[in-house]
Amino acid sequence: QEDEIVTLTSFSSLDKLPISATLDFLSSKIDMTNCLSNCSNQGKCNITNGFAFCNCRKYFIGDKCEKDLRKCSSNPCFNGGSCVEMFELNKYECLCDEMFYGKNCEFKIDVCENETCSKHGYCKDFQSKPKCICDYLFSGDKCEIESGEIKAIKKTVTSASAVAIVCLVLFYSIFIIFDAIKFSSNILEIIKLLIKK
Image (tube, rainbow, N blue to C red):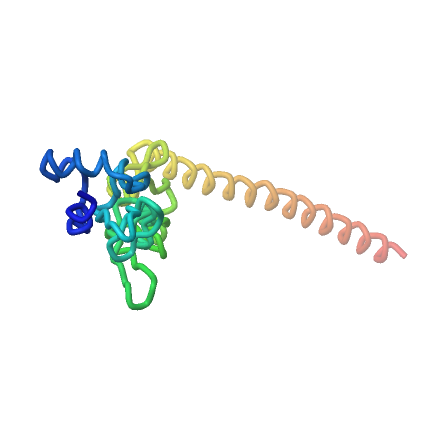
């Protein structure tokens, strides 16, 4: 009976064998401890010298072929990146989605990096596109449009500034004129005093 079993030297799992062969295996003296729980990752159960063991596929090791040596098996690529095995170099490469970069696609591209929003708002990432959130009283795609209120305020400030400048000039002019009159009257007094002498 063991001679028949030895001729069946390789199988992927017990449930793949004919029932009679499975019963023969289970009733034999062959130590099938490693193969009874089946070899994982499509390993094959081999029998050598009355001992059953898992023969693993390439890139798998362990008593039950449970350890995967492929670099991509640990899912190292983030944010939807695809892992590409480079077996000959014993490494992997992540192919990143267009909005991500880095060895493992761990960094998101800053879509707002070069967007200033006309200095009247701030940029926000909206569905991977830059969107300006405008300050109060500003609008437009880049917050470049001033509201009517701001235009009115600017006109008022400009007009008020002009009026203030005119008032200041007049105020100081009056002082200068009074000083000139006072000075000229003092000169006349001095001249009168000089003439009397």
